[in-house]
Structures are given as C-alpha cells and as structure tokens.
Length: 383
Image (tube, rainbow, N blue to C red):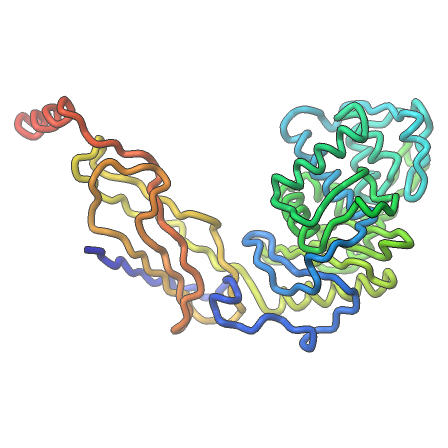
C-alpha cells in the first residue's frame, strides 16, 4: 500500500519552469515569432528545456562559435587546477601566423592565461585560441581531439571539429544550433567565463591595444552574459547569446544569419519571448524529504533524494503550485542507492506540470544475525 503525502506550498510570485509538453502547451511556432535565420534554438539553462527550435539539428558551419568548446575546455582545465590564470603562455610562430580576428601576437610574445582568455572571449582572437590550445595540449590537433571527445561526452551527435578557431570553412568542421546550445549551457555553468564574456571594452599590452566585444548584446541587452559570435563568408553570421534575469538564464543560438543586425534581432526576439513568458519553479521549498522505515534493514530508516534537476519550467501565470509526494509506508531491506521509490508531482491548477522520481539516497543492506541480536538486546536492556 502506498500513502499519499500531500503538501501545498503557496508561492506568492510563481517563479516556475516546466516542460511545455507537460502543460500541453503548443510549441512556439514560426507564425508566432519572426526568426529570419535558417537555423535557431532557444533553451533554458537550469532545465535544458527547449522553447523554440528551427532546423536545430541541421549541420552548419559554426565559424568562431567553435570557440564555445575551446573556452569550455580551457575553463575546465583552470578549475581542475591543470593551469592557472597567472600562467605565462608563449606564442609560437604558428599561433602568431593566424589571421581573421586576432590581436597580432608575435612569435615569442608572452601573455598570461588571463589575458589570452580575455582576447578569445572578447574579440574572438584566433591567434590566442591556437596559442592556448598548444599551451594546454602541446599541439592544436591534440586539443581538437579533446574537443571532439568532449562533444561526445556531452552527447552532441551533430558536431565534429577539425580546428579550435572556426576560421577555416571545412566541410568536416560542423555543428548544429542544438549542439551549440548544449555546449554553451555547459560553459555558462562555470561562472568564471562570465568574467570575460561580459566585458564590453578592455585592453591588453599595458593599455596600448584596445579590445571591443564582438557581441554587441553585451552592451545594450539587459542581463546579457555573453557568449560567442562568429562569421565567415560561408558560415555567415552566427551567435550564441546568453542572458540572465531574476535567476533565470536562457541561451539563444542563431546560425547562418545574413547580417549582424539580423542575428542580433533574432536572438533578442527569442530572449524577449522567454523572459516574458517563462520562469523557474523550484521542486522543493527546501524542506528535507521524509525518511522511510526499513524492515530488517541494517539501518532503521532510509533517506531519500529527488532524481534530476532542482527546477521545472512553467509559463508565468501567477498561480500557486501544489506539490504531492507519493511514497510507500515502509520498505523491506535490502534497498540499493538510486532505487526508485516514489514520485514528486507538481500541479498548477488542474494540470500536472512535472513528475520527478524519488529514489533511495544510500544503500541499506539487510541486517545480519549479529545485528538482530544486538538490536534485540538494546530493546530488552535499554542499551
């Protein structure tokens, strides 16, 4: 027998995000919003929920949006302690030879990792991207192999890299709007990147060389947190734009737009739609989940945890959220960690907007003979 433990949390201002299909809402259609670019996607960061997509899995040339993955690997190496922001990077002749967007590195010129990251994130410096790839991996090709391995780890099925810059239009160097959104989501989970991607103007070489962000949304779009622009004559104008307001962050990816204005307008339209219509709803009010009694268990009670994220995506409505927790009265040992034991349901009005599994938070083995005797002695003699 299962017992339904119900509790209702009055949320004065609903900050909710729930999968659209769970609310039976119609997906955003092209007739609802004008997106000129042939490929685009809108994703929420915390849940990964997709709010809009247009040919989002089509293979596209990414240009310098490639550097989302380049920056992800570099940030991960910094946070893993493999390199530090204070490390000195020496430019090779090969790195210094790269054209396109660059800061005109000279062979043998030295900069800190901090300065290199700033140049890559702000002005999309190809020479600095190659210098950093060589610094952390020895050669650019070894670094590119890491990029492809990381893409595989992230489940990116429509991505393959042949370089770390995106400078060259290569048929074997491709990605998709969806894959860019996923790697962008992974990158902005690291707050360190925003120290660089939100810079509007800065300088290097003691102030003698100015840097102006290629992403103009950083200057004028409220809450913009980055992230990366790109352009080649074949890839056209690409953009992964990220923005955060009131604790909710969205990712709008635009591929192959015809102009800078078009890609900025498309990204702005998608972000405006998201902020106007959706918000985050926590799956918990912070109260701990109950513990379940375990018959014949080495421990008398089993702690629980929610499986999955901490939030759901719901349309803004001002309505109150109701939460119900369905669990068994008790369990029999053994119970393995991660075993599904119940369900947390979130309702708004008469709609179930999310269902999250409740699982065992640890292993509880069956009690042995010695344990039974010890427990019996404790109950008899008050030990």
